Length: 554
Image (cartoon, rainbow, N blue to C red; front, side, top):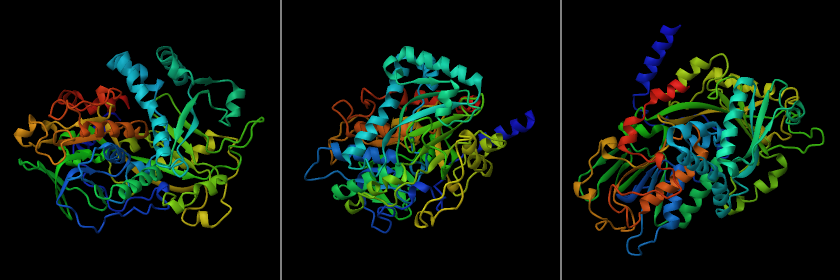
């Protein structure tokens, strides 16, 4: 057995050292993407410009946060307006953002003690507060964009549910430390372990306890495509999006305009290249291989049981108002996650934005958006070795999806009840009958040291040498003097927690690109004060990050 595992690890090590390549052209269809946005194939047949001040590669939540922040905050030059091109290999927002669980549920007490030991108390607190800030930040963004209803961005009560007493006891100890060090942030937590309390939550009798706090949920695809639609319309002279236009290479020119982004449809000269491709980052940045490792995860959309979410002992119907993380065993790394779509009664409201061009179709019907199973069930070890380093989101792991297809009825047994069916054929015509409406996969970006990688990419990592003079001179030659010095940038590696990292990481990177009087020269780039410094990319961090450390924890 040990020999077999050793062989599997050797094969895995070889696999994650390779380029992830370009995204496959015919991926599985995530439930979030039906119906598709009007900008799904935007710019597919349009002529590429010869030049852009900034080329952003990737059209998910990271790229959207970056372009929104730059466009809404840039002081335009009337003679030479800022030009930004966004390149997308497939449909708009068809990567991890449109394939995740829709949960804004950051790991808090779960990671705090480890972060404190590794980085010190103050840095650990900053990371926790950064993660927590995403819910309010995304709610604010959705409101500003008039997308609160259509994006379903909302607060929910979230529950960490435990089926193993040993792990539950350990997590209670971690929660106590978290609440002692961060009393304001920990005040919303409540530990539930009495049978009456657990029954009221409709959880299985096998549940040993749970922890409750406030978190969030969102329809990520609608949020991102709604924002991009507004930006394309409002900044039509500055911003262009080209779908089905993969960036196949980035080259350093050694000239005044330092970069060329090449695609099958033509090349674009640029002063700034932004890598916002998460799990695919190391395709264009070979130095990031084994630093950001792709991994395939599986998701499902399921019809809830008729008995679930109903009034229990006088309680209110909680459909669409809760999210869950289920820990089935002793390992904290083995969990499943669940959010629920709003109930059918929201149908009229959900369609309200259609005439404005924001609404994107059918209202939800209380679907259970359930994912995980990565290290669960009888195929856990096989699934692990198959998933890590895998960038093929055309298919999924059979064992994992089989596990996900049956787990919910057990997690909520006996409250689940009989299977639910929509009242109209229209709502069901595109999806499978039975409990599972849809299942799909998506590609995560696992960071070797567990932290996102954000900032200007050092040339030792990019393997591309910019024009030497650009390393010291201020931005006097650029057509847009308000930007930071030319260069390559990255914002990626969220290790499955993109909704609690990506938006504000993208915002921080955009502020770095916009520049201040202190960071118009390379080497003096400054992130906002609220951004965790340990998330910034540097040669020193890059040298230390070892993916084997992450693999050992799993």
